[in-house]
Amino acid sequence: MGKEYCYVFAVECKALVIDFLVPIAGNATLGHHPYLALLARPSRKRVISRHKKNSVTGGNIVGDKPFLTDIKTLRERARQHIERGAVTEGYSADRETVIRLLNEALATEIVCVLRYKRHYFMATGIHAESVAAEFLQHATDEQAHADQIAQRIVQLGGEPNFSPEGLLTRSHAEYVEGDTLNDMIKEDLVAERIAIDSYREMITFVGNDDPTTRRMMEGILAMEEEHADDLVNLLEKLEG
Image (cartoon, rainbow, N blue to C red; front, side, top):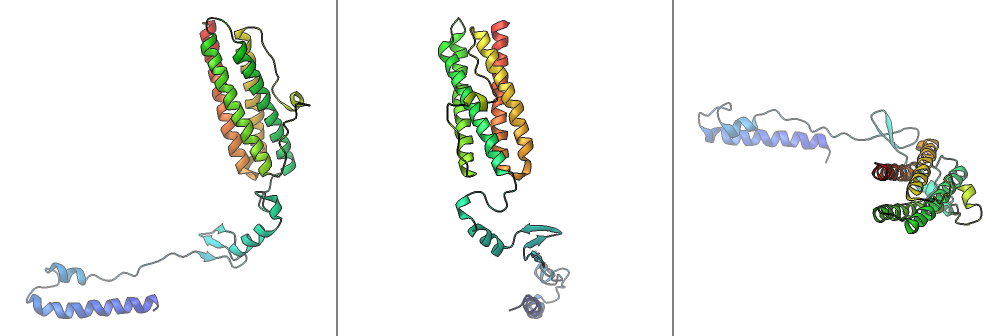
């Protein structure tokens, strides 16, 4: 039954009910009898908004903006080159360059893990216990970052480079041991600042072409900035 017929049917039913109740109500007028006044209100058509179809692509349109790609097109795309996994036809970044940058970030994180681990075990002095605990936490965080990056490289169809050969060349940060507790903190702080700048540039390069990689690197960047703040606070306590 069409909505126009439903509307007419409802109006006729309302009229029948009013005809039935008016005699019962006696002298009650529509304006004073609550039930009759309710029934006497003019009916409103319920307006249901529907998505219009794009006459060219067949996709849905909300207002003047495309809403979704045509389902048939999405299904056809998904079946093409299925060996690429998460890399679909809609992926617009330079995949090879993104993988190379991610492997550089992976090397950076691995070097940071190794440096923080050494500093954790080599920390000595009156403040060594609290500083060493911070080193260990940072090492754990950097290892988690390395795992995230490696997983994303695999998703993009690449291979994470864990080879020790050329590790320091690929890494943006350096591996400096440091002789004293202050030296260790300063070297870690320098490394964090290098990572912050390089990761920020990666995020800008990727932009909206690879939002998944961008969001991942934004999360890692936020953690590196937090590490830098932690190290600055440690220095202030030691030197203050």
